[in-house]
Length: 56
Image (spheres, rainbow, N blue to C red):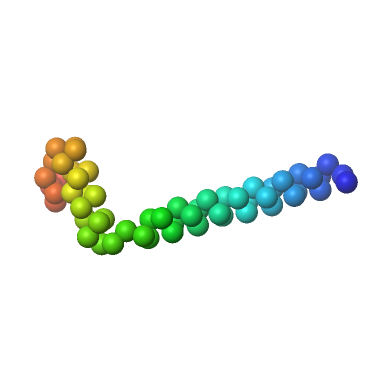
């Protein structure tokens, strides 16, 4: 097999692996309910010490 074929196969494998990682992260992100997302955002705001809806 020529080196450029191996390079092409490695590129295809890299693209496929990246797609799998992105799909897994998206699936994990969508698993939160709206109430859970709201609670997590409020917890982040409390860590920073600001009030929700105010700009710095």
